[in-house]
Image: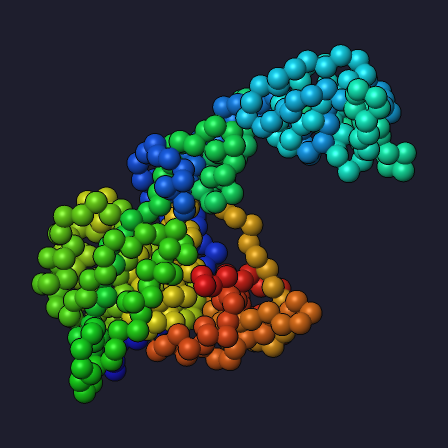
Length: 402
């Protein structure tokens, strides 16, 4: 009788719900580094992002208009302009006004900023006067110092993901450098005698349809791909590859995770003293995955060889791996109601490509076909259907990196 793959035999595997806890308990976080946040998209904050200055740093105009002193509704216009980025050129006395641009510091004596479309200006003799329009309601367009935050305020918590919005806030708060972990760096390995890279096709071989796009899906999980290697099914070559000098924290491999005659990854891991943390996950497709701690401190994420199974395993387990290694806080799960799918009664989670339709519900794109990624062409997410899920079940959905 032939060997049974983990795609079929999931009895010894962990559940999808247990991945986070297993990896968090077994994997120490990668070292901390200090870096400009603009160069660290996808990293994780080690400590909170704290404002180094108030925003605004002074009372400023929220709109183009006039800085005025006193209740009005009429003020004498002083010559000059308060411009953004420059100290106010004058001080206002009671009943006076001066032109001001958006973002400019308000002059001493100003009690309000009135936007230009809410006033009329007219010349009376040798002077100009500014009169508030009677048909508009009074509002004060001064942004007060510290209106948004003050120096020392926490703007993002430890464990937050460094995304473009956080980078922008850090610059506004004059705190563009921070202690971070990640983004994780990975060496990527694709194994298999049947895999063909560039060149003419040969009988019995298939084109590598995963290697060219795997770095994109890894980036979607905040993992940077350093290099993609391709090796035949040769245990000696595979073992020597693990001895290569690298500064990557991760190894991501594809293939050799089953229990067939050509699947020698587990034997190699035993020879090099690796500690297997996860040997299969109770999910289909993508169940025959391995997570191991290598003797040199790197972490291995070994994905099954079929493209859809590999991407399913990466999207399910990759996020937990990043959380464990960088100390990232978990994001709230995204939920969707599946209108048409039934989970298999196999004691495992069924992973189904799905798309959202009118009304906000989700529909599957059909039975998952693992040898290619054609099912992802019309999909927006992978729906995770727990055992026993019925039509209309509310399930977690994992957005697919686009």
